[in-house]
Length: 472
Ligand code: GLA
Image (cartoon, rainbow, N blue to C red; front, side):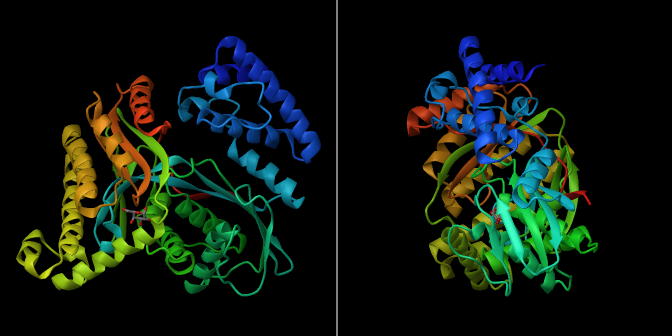
């Protein structure tokens, strides 16, 4: 199939009429040639960039250079990435990353590593409380390419940052617009903490095919991909448990978020068609097969509470205080009976936070049992109950997330729905049977648009393998 035909088919799938789609396809090809000429990037890169803009257009922004084409009117339907993947849009990431590395540093990378994003299936804020959690690695993530340098310069590039960040000397967190480099720098800091060697100097490029702001944990993905790349670059090997702990250490001690092990654990131990079960106390990791014929849909609201990091840290603190008041080290050690007995001694907030965590751990275990029995209704009910507990007890939901859950659970073929990740904005996950369709997802998205003014991104996510070195 010619490039023009592929692009036309893509634009049609995005909702354009046949005539519009062909015009869009031709403009895309022309713009890609122009960009490649004027920006000194490869045509492959230029096309990837343009297709990203078109996808943004689907979310309601008209990209610059597309003034002649009303992308918004042409493409009212949310994009389904599983369809998109089969098109030119999904240039193989490895090829994209190599091109970016070559264009940025004028050389070839020595290693390439990738780590997936994750869906939090159930187990909300249980991880740092020593509880259990179930998550799934998705088939999208962050890719890192790196090559050693003979001087001690660390040169880092990603298209999010847009320019090369050069760094040398002491490892201290960066503030301002380049602060994304705190993830790879934090990993270097963590490697030293774990007694591992770090590359003195290197060229480094990170590239993502993970939807941003969807609560799919791009931070854990960049930590694990960076750790794998640095470890391979220095000729070392580490067990997967250590890799996961390195990622969390970077996040806790360098980036400054007091997260648990969920995100890094799922990114590290993910397997296609499986959920990852983590007992965060050990921590210990195992996998549970996904029931056949079940699917994940993500509804990304693109909303984010301005104080999201502070709120996460506040919940962490509240949980630790509640554990102390209960006389246990971590809330996972407390029981509901103990909590009821201590009710008078606890503040209302501490009581509700503790109840959420203790009951949520119970729901994770019930979900695991229900998965074993293939009791999909019971799994779905636990997921929705988890959301209600976030909504009323842990108070990390928002009106937008609640609205989506309300609409989803009244839709046929939805087994359960809940916020996924830390909360305070972000995305809702629906767990569905295979009968749930794009049309049904569009209906929910349309209702949301009517209520809140802009449609959420709808992503039909596939599970995928855990973090690994791809080249080198
Ligand atoms: C974020 C954190 C995780 C976990 C979840 C909530 O994703 O990074 O460690 O605490 O929130 O369950």
